[in-house]
Length: 109
Image (cartoon, rainbow, N blue to C red; front, top):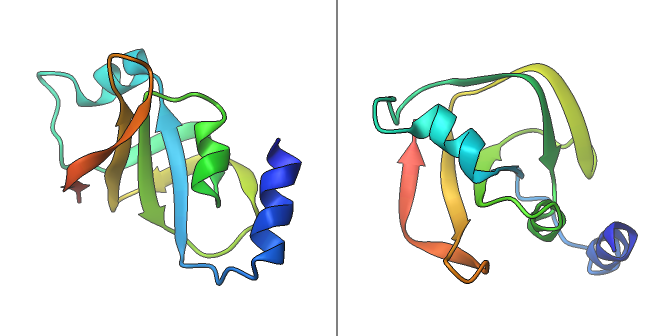
């Protein structure tokens, strides 16, 4: 399925918009953004996988998908010792398990 998405992306001759995506499961999200945590913070990861195509990120079934600006490095990249300062929530899973776009843009700076 990943290969099919990448081929469709290349054939469409889509111009890269500078956005990459990453996702969290519910427990990871609560650990980072739980009740007593700050919403506006720099995220630092020992290891994280970032995706150029939103749909490819959704294949890994995250509960929350975030978007951030980054230079082009390929379709999928495992980054080590990586920090993200400006990001925002793009979509989250509802009770039925379907990814829904967030109504208003929630920015985390």
